[in-house]
Image 1 (cartoon, helix red, strand yellow):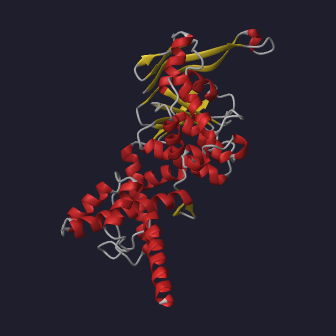
Image 2: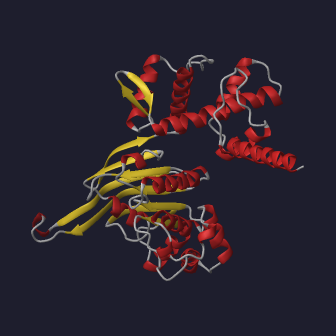
Image 3: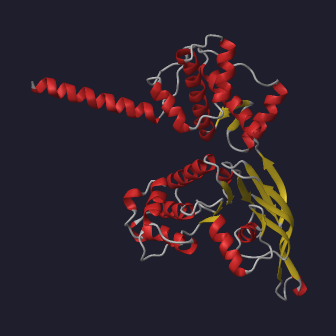
Length: 379
């Protein structure tokens, strides 16, 4: 989806810098980003992050090298052709929300449509619905919180169905609560197949991505790549930690040798899924939330295979559950849970963590009970 071949971007230096020569903002960069990958680009100020975003976003041209976006080399295109590629392929989310103050939320989203082809208020409203702002469509930016404005900016980036989302410090102006909301939205887009390139200086935010690129002085100095297989290894370790914490319930089978587990745990500690305390491995809040999700998917799958498909062989149940836990989306997991009647335990007796669907079902049940009680009292 994105490929850079030996890309350099140079600027004339001021007289007092480098004797008036050239400063390389990017120095012979090559990288490849596959469709559907989420890449975090990190580095200190002046490392070349913004220059990279400008080049990939067709806002600037390289001094030398090739930039391929979705199979097209955009390095030497005319300004009008760059405008076309940018409108067709790229969705931008910036730290500054860049909202037009006298346009409503839906009109700000429609503005992106205007520069793409033609406006469609229905589509713009659907984009706002995707980010949870249906009821704020007619509000001006001054009537929206910072988090809501950023979500409008994300809706604006999505409305033309871009193949690439460029997010430049998308949580930089947000508090912790709104940062979490925006990162969840990006995670949902990633799960739906969007290719995301995100610039951030925040370690916690950078850990959400599949791949991390560290830039210094215009060069990529380190690439950390978390493949599907590595992510599955992470889930296995998190699942084992969760089972170990339960103690009295069944223990998940070991998937690694001790040496392999130490290597995986070290990587997980580096990206913030676990932490080491006096030689013991412990969850971080993010790691615990991910472990909870994995355990919930796994144990619901076990219940599905045994209760509905009548599979009784322990080995087959475990093998199929391990496969399912890596591919079930939250929505499908909740549907399975609802179909099974929100079971409390897996076939082994271990508790199944509750999901939103369980809480909604319990709330509906309580409402029914209260209604029946009220009817009984009145009669």
